[in-house]
Length: 228
Image (cartoon, rainbow, N blue to C red; front, side):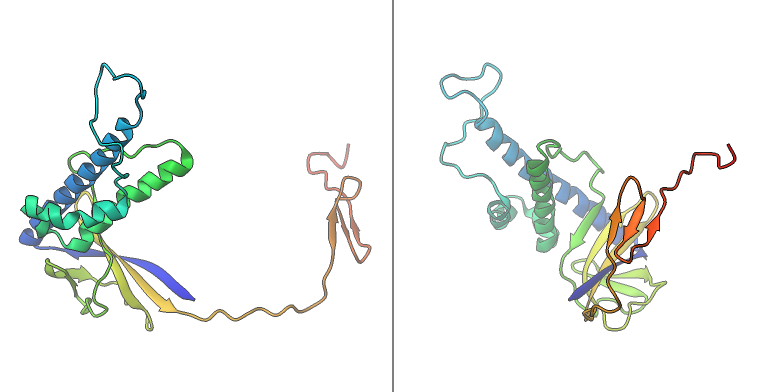
């Protein structure tokens, strides 16, 4: 069995690194909104009547066009990078997790039936996820982030022995940056063997509780004055 824990640390990117992080957040926000627009257009193109056109708007999408699901949109990222070179500035896995975040929200909407995903406004995207990171990325006072380099980190709590670093989420707060580090370890949970003697319990109206040992407990009357 795997045990996963999340540890939060404050990080101190320099001015160049912070500018790059802010740029990544906006690129990811644009990717999120673009992918959401594809989903909305596909849904709107199938919401109209089949025998007439809407007087408000039309979305001309072929009837055999499949739904822009997660894997379809993820596989279109390499082509999108050629058309929009700025996408290549962000680590590939970060873009993929951004698309995954959108489809998690979409699947949640499908289950609940309300809460359609919304477009992200400027500055509204606050975090990016690195789903894979080197186990030795933390050197004690620095953490190595792909395409960002070494970033100072306040490792106020050491990573427990036996745990390995699995992923890192960088979060932008109002006046600081934080790194939420997910660590994992394989643990063995012993099987608890039955012991002692089993006792049956029944709750009722005349008697509050009755056990298989013929023990009876009266119904408590908390709001009745015993002296009245």
